[in-house]
Image (cartoon, rainbow, N blue to C red):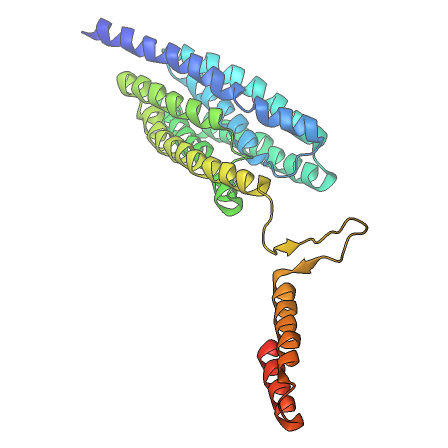
Length: 287
């Protein structure tokens, strides 16, 4: 039975590695957009910096445990690719954003990771050290899954999915499922628990993508329709083009024409009666 469980653990670990590989590659369309625009406007560096820090923590945790080779392999690749993403972001970021990103990296990678390694190495030993590092990994893995919430907020605010890659949401959800079962079968809840939240946030992002992507399509279709707010009729004769007249102006002209026509039939009326009739007609036109 133990051997059967080990096989399933290995299988979910391998699947987790494969899907996580695509998770790490899924932001490539985002960075392609940054490359085309030559600008990082609208994009955040926080998710990539946090993901880099989290990958480093998981590698440290894996070295403190046994039978965690699959954690080392995927997180080593994660460190490599996230470092490339952050470097690419820094290259195209404006000076102010570049400085903020560097400060964040120093705080997380140098200050945070360095402090965790020093404290756990000197203050804790054996299984206690692995347990403490595991709790820290759990917390920061939750931060990795929560980090895209800033993108979710932007999607809801702008009603646009331009800055939320759909592939990333899909692969995050699948990866969370695989690593949850891997941690559950390995009886390592520091691995299993964060992926429950990862699954929930992955589903949320896909739902938002479907909702706001449809709205964008409707807006584009409406923008392609001709504007028919003010109906304007253009009158032309054979020799020259007459001024453009609105429907309201044409109605007023017709009323005035009716007034002139009726005046011809007022010859048998007195002058005062004629004036009263004219005033009445003009009031009708003005109304």
